[in-house]
Length: 172
Ligand SMILES: [Zn+2]
Ligand SMILES: [Zn+2]
Image 1 (cartoon, rainbow, N blue to C red):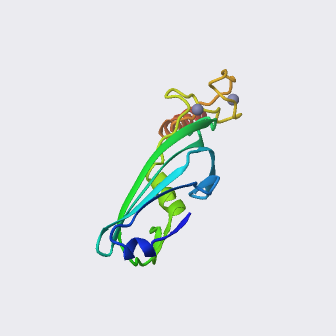
Image 2 (cartoon, rainbow, N blue to C red):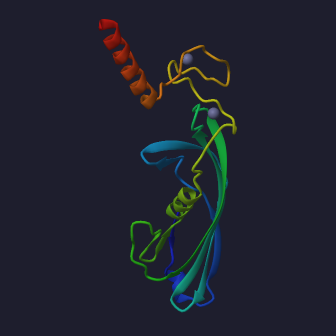
């Protein structure tokens, strides 16, 4: 929602609250799109705090489907958000600002908050076994029997040396 803040700055007693919704149905993060499975209404409040300043509060909640880091199964992650900003008007738009001149963009304000709250680690369960690196089978369901032992490169080098030594001694 785009909110015109002109009146908020002109009237000393300006105090306004409205309900709107977060428009996007997905969130883009580092080129990946995540589906929003549930959205709560957005409550936006604007009030004139002191001369030239407005106080903005946006409250909402949503659930986003984020694939497990290990097995890619979707995990429903809930976000509870209270975004608060005290700003001086008119404000010059910068890359991460959600106030452009006299206009507030509530979607941008909420997106910014989601990014701040985004989990750095997302697992379907703490002991998720993940997918087999050979065949892609879900190891939480069953063991597939693949040989996933990755040889330690240092050990492999020693083995090579040992083999060379053996071959050399066989020749003599
Ligand atoms: Zn998992
Ligand atoms: Zn496998």
